[in-house]
Each structure stands twice: as C-alpha cells, then as structure tokens.
Image (tube, rainbow, N blue to C red; front, top):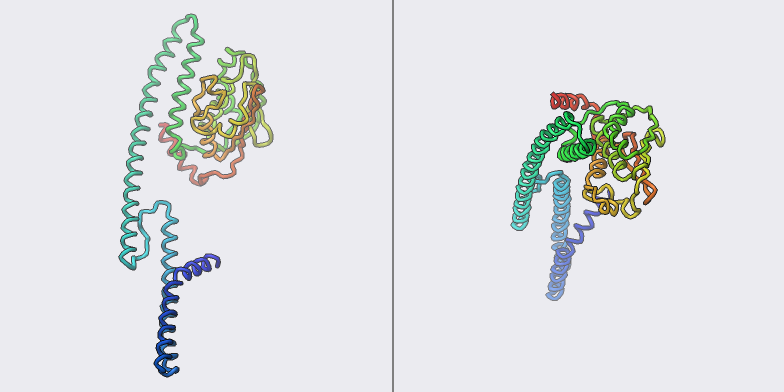
Length: 350
C-alpha cells in the first residue's frame, strides 16, 4: 500500500504543470465567455465535457505510469541486467534513453568478459606455476633425505615453508570456485587437529615450544581438507609469532568453539578490526617482515564459505587467541546436493 501511495504522489507532482495549464485555459475560456455575455449553461457544459476528458486522460496516464514503473523495477532487480524487460518506449526521448541503456549494458558485459578472460588466464598461469614448482621442491627433499650434513634440519624447515606458501597460492586460486571442491560431511575434529599439528611438529621442537592440546572429542559438519588448511594457517601464525620457549594451547571454549591460544607478541588493538583484510599485515607483521597478509584473509573467506565463524582476541606482549565457531548457521549449500559435490571431488582426485 505504501508503494502505491508513493507512486501516486510522485506521479501527481509530475502532473502539476499540465493540470495548472488545463485550469488556466479553462479559466481563460470562462472569462472570455463572460465578457461576451455568452450563456452560462453552455460554458459550464463545455467545461464539464473537457473536464471529463481530462480526468479520463489522467486516470489512463496514472495506470500506464504505474505499470511501466513496475516493469522498470523488475528490470532493475535482475541480477545481471542486459537491457531486457524494459517497457515499450512511448516517445523519441524514451527510445533514445533505452538505446543508451542497452549500449551501456553491452559495453559493461564486454568489459566484464574481458576481465574474466584475463583473470582466467592469470589463474591458469599461476596454477601451472604452482604445480611446476612442486617438482624441484620434491627433488630437493629427496636429495636431502639421502645425505646427512650440517644445517639439514634448518633447510628442511625452510623447504617446508616454501611448500606451505605454494599451497597458499593454490588455495587462493581455488577460493572463488571453492563450492565445486567442497565435500561436506561429519568429521572428527581431533583427527583434523592432529594432522595439522603433525606438520608443524619440527617447528615446535626446533623452537622449544610447548604444545598444550586438550582432545576436543567433537564431531563437526564441515569439509575436512579446507578446515585442515585453516588450522594449519592459524598454527603457522602462532608458531611464527611466539618466541622460543613459549606455549601454544588448543582447546574447546564451549560446546562448538575451537580456540587456539599462543603466548606470542600479540596484535595491537587498532589492528584487530583489519586483520582479515587481504594484504593487511599490521604493525607487528611489518616489524617482523614475515607476514604476507594472506593467511588470515584466506581463513576468513574459507570459514565463511563453510558457515563457520572466526574471532580474534589479542593483547600486545601477552599473546593471541583465535576462536572458530564450528556450528553451521548459514551454510550456502544445499545439503541435498552434497552427493553431487562428493562425486565431483572424487572425479578430481582420480
């Protein structure tokens, strides 16, 4: 009802000029008739006929305006408007405006197509590069396994970091098309945590970090591969910014919240609202010169796709606590389609 009233009053404001013109002409006609002493009844009869015709015109124009407004509103609600669904032009200027709108839509579509092509080419290049770089990394690892030499452990750790950065690139490239790679099922959270911690065991030993891990004994509905990647990134950050001899604790803070707490350098309060932005490293990240600004950004995007939530609490010099809400409140997938995703995932792995 409010929408109809809004349309009516806007239409009425647009018709003020023509209504004023009609009343002025009618008044002029009545004045001339009075000056020439014409019969009043004839003047009123003529005025009544013109008034009836004018009212019919106004009613028809209002109905036409309301219909055209609805058609335009429906066109604007289209997700990808391409100039279709517009009402038929009723005049020269409307035809020109519609032609201009369609030309702008075509140009926009061509521009978007060009951007998509460039993005696809860039993604294909980096995907190929990431897979190619794995070959020399694997060769280096095999060579290092054959020989014992001074500094071997440090070289293995640096090689592991290179592998993680390559994996980060691949995950970043797959992020936009992540839905096609999801396999949502009930998973043992302890198994995922242990797998992530195992990869960083050498860093815990080398830096003499104490791990306080309390088995969570929780089943979660998630994608095991993507959640493990997120936990690896969070553990990597905890290890990176915790001084030698510090500790990292993994525990359940409530029935559905996984927490990872470290005794590292922490994050400044003014940096906390921006830690999930792409490329943002913060004061400590710039000082340490080890941050890429992608880790937490990827974690946030992935967890959002999985319908999990992430929060960070931190104090400079006292450490950081990252909490992940494991309850799925707004999953952007139809669980009935999980079988199709499973089939797609199996085909890719084969």
